[in-house]
Structures are given as C-alpha cells and as structure tokens.
Length: 77
Image 1: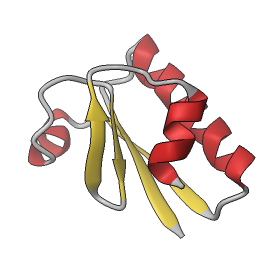
Image 2: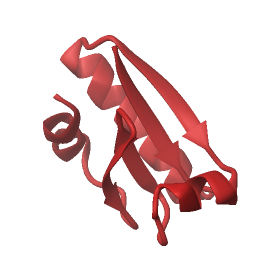
Image 3: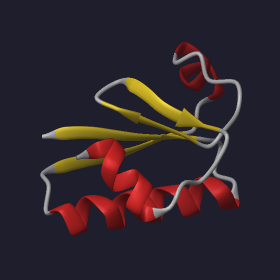
C-alpha cells in the first residue's frame, strides 16, 4: 500500500491537490492511504517551504503547485 500525504494548511489549493491525488489513485486502481498533514511543524520536517506538496511513501515529489491528475498518476504509479 502506498502512503500518499498531502502537505498543506488546508488552503483551497491543498484541497484541490487532495482531490486530484485521490482521483489519480482511484483511476490507477491502486491500494493507498491518503493522509493530510496540516501541522506546520510536520510539514517543515519534510523540508517543504511551499504548499501544497505531495509526498509518496514519505518522499516529497513536488511542492508549491497542483499538477494535473495525469501528472499525479505518473508520480504515484
């Protein structure tokens, strides 16, 4: 099971990223756990300065933007 983490404080872009990530994972039919990390101290532990960000299995894949569902599928597949 992949652990997908949305790093962000709950802004509209963070919500959009969470929705797009969930859609991408469902389209791929993958087994995943989606976690929203909103605590700024936790986000900083990832070394992220710009939110939203997506971490896959604890590794940050991108930050500061909301990629398309297709791009997310490439990242998490």
